[in-house]
View 1: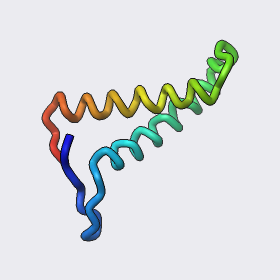
View 2: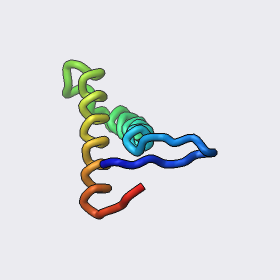
View 3: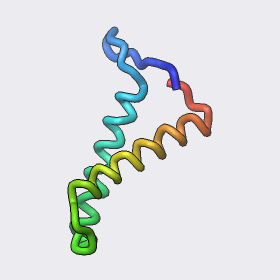
View 4: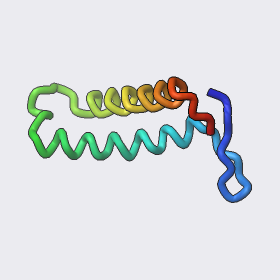
Length: 71
């Protein structure tokens, strides 16, 4: 995935923008997992949060590449 997004004349890498979106989605997923009490089944909450972020970022990159969306 090669590309940049121009925001106010400043070029920002696409992966950075996808990481920001993944961070927002991870925050939502963490709140939902906490609300439903899913964290009582895991030993290390921080590691689960990091794994969720990596998975969501990977899914976003895959989806953008799969559907041919070029930014």
